[in-house]
Amino acid sequence: MLVSLKASQVRAEARVSLRGYWAPLAGATVLYLLLSVVSGFIPFLGPLLIGIPLYLGYYNTIRLTRKGRRASCGGIFSAFGNGLFWRSIGTMLLTGIFVLLWALLLIIPGIIAAFSYALAPWIILEDPTCGCNEALNRSKVLMKGNKWRLFCLSLSFIGWAILSILTLGIGTFWLMPYIVMASYTFYVHASAQSTQTQFMNPISAPYTTDHSAPMLGSVVPVAVV
Image (cartoon, rainbow, N blue to C red; front, side):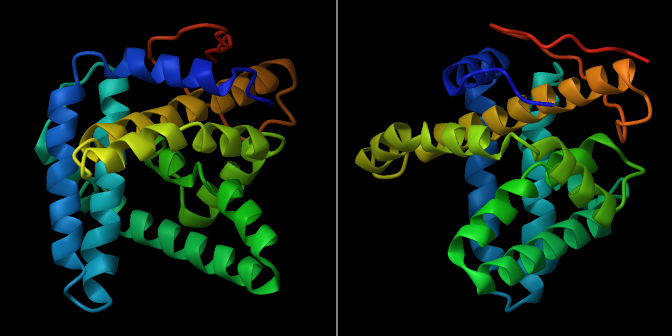
């Protein structure tokens, strides 16, 4: 289930998905960051009950643009309903706990754990029936052999991050949607590989996911069951 695309190809595909959505997603980013800062003034409960659902809602807004849905600032509130509220909180809490426990051993195992669970937010957004533990387990399966690839993809944004700093942070409003869309693009290819594996060997694959999205470069065929 290895993602065959290079980091540059994933970024290029992400830019295709963002075409026509840069401005509204920049606006959604501004609102998301503002509300996240405000929620931080409420000790513990603010980040937990407001910050995490906003985080998943922001991810969901960007995810839906790849599927051709209209982007809007109101999309960042989508995780407060539709059964996502408690699942989003539970998933991110479990992720934080497991990463922290691994990090207590050594920094490197903590980093590896963080990348192992990196796709869990996309999984609970794509599958409304998926529980918190199941999302983490699915992420671990998808990330097997792909952690280094996602790490390299993350590092490839360093230059853009430096440019954002040079613009006094204004560039961040466009960089964040770019990074999140690249993450979702990576997830799409990882899950497509998993679907292909299930098509060839139904016993070994844990689940299927169908994605409707523009592809660029080396596209992994998706077997629709």
